[in-house]
Length: 245
Image (cartoon, rainbow, N blue to C red; front, side, top):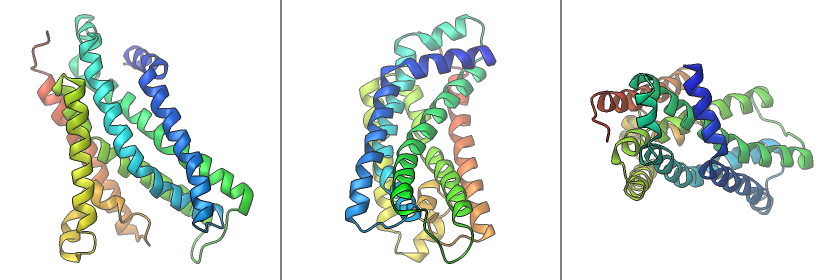
């Protein structure tokens, strides 16, 4: 497992698709600093919350495109076929590709948030909140943001893994994520519909910045983990019997 993961990470961090997306997300973080100041942000904590919300829309687009290129290019460049011929199990191949993708998503999420938060904290100070320790709340929130966002972007894995066409994969990924986001956003004010949508990772993405009870946090974790597991499981079930060409 360590060998295939090492190969995966080496290819990931040297690839133009990763570097390009990483630079884009860094620029998003830098751009929010100016936007946040114009919007009246006066503390690092407010900047952190604003940046966490701001990067999501870009992540949905950038992550969808990245997934389409990352997974389908592995087939087109015959890297996955080579891994199978080298004797690696299909389960380990799926897991290693998913770990590589999730690692990239975590970096894409954290980098702009950190840049904006650290810069605004340096300028304004970290700030205060009415309840709880501000540093603890920021740490808890960023971990939940990462979990919810990578769970949402997990739906791109089975789509990308089996489309075999970069353009088609990107189109479907972007369409699915944006439609899902749009529908959730349009129903967020409807409490009856949100009772259902709260059990999706996209629904949770609209709820994690409010006041959270212990049961709310557990729901976020369970919904996200189930979404991630389901996406990886569907991918593996389909791939394990697929004939590679």
